[in-house]
Image 1: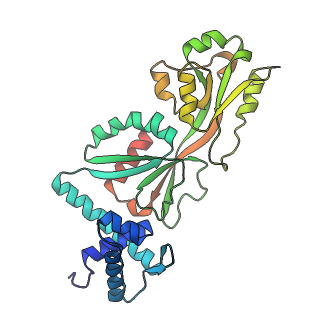
Image 2: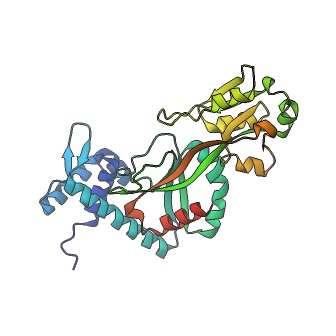
Image 3: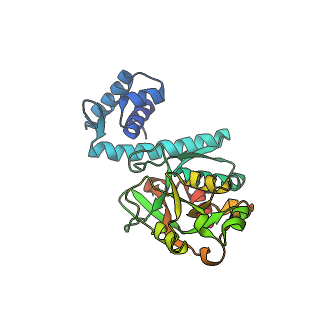
Length: 295
């Protein structure tokens, strides 16, 4: 029945090279030589009588036929690995890409709850600010992004799922509020300057100026929301930050939202999920997505 299929080694070599867009990187991943990878792929192309890669000086790119086989090969190997891990009693690894602040202040503190419910799924988190190419980088299974979700929630290969629209508030330690709540002109405000230049201006500075009437406010900036939160947690000032990311600090009484005129909230941006359509039937993807929506 399967005598017309190429060898598993050839499929593995091709899938790795397709996913990494590099024969050299595929060789490192599979612990063989680049020559061995090239030979396996050339043999595969000869047997199929199609070209799978366009070979360039410093990179390789998939042809249309290559893209078709890459999607099928990856899905088949994922399914095979899942079954093998199930038979061996090994956990299924599932990799999530998200921002540093969302990972540190929201996802990681809650992850133990997911692991208790699904001990057979090993969640790996890649905290990074760069945007992953989910259509081609198969080292990541799912991404949680910040900004405005695309108007088209489905493309040929990807699914976008809105999760929540954040509210941004003014947060500081209880002691800091006691000292400055009545006289905000002497307070220090911490804001985050996003690394992504395409994110819209939410008017945070203008809101601060309207609160500190007739006085130039003391505003300091960080390029990472983690640092903004830590500055407030250390009692240095008031962080203007997402209520979602400081929920754990509020729960523990480390931070509290301002009262009276500074209790206002600013409507922020969205967190949304990005997932490849090839994972629609993947049990780990289904469980994590359902858990995330419930949270």
